[in-house]
Image (cartoon, rainbow, N blue to C red):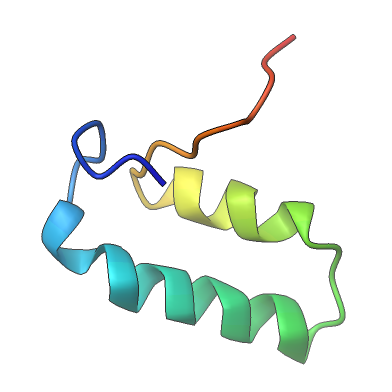
Length: 50
């Protein structure tokens, strides 16, 4: 995650933990964590846009 490009860098750790919890709870693929973080206004490094 690129904290400088995130809308809420102070909340990044809590958002990441929340997204990981949701992904694990519902048995989603790892890519769902990226979508979750992006939905919360964070910029995720290494994501290819098409």
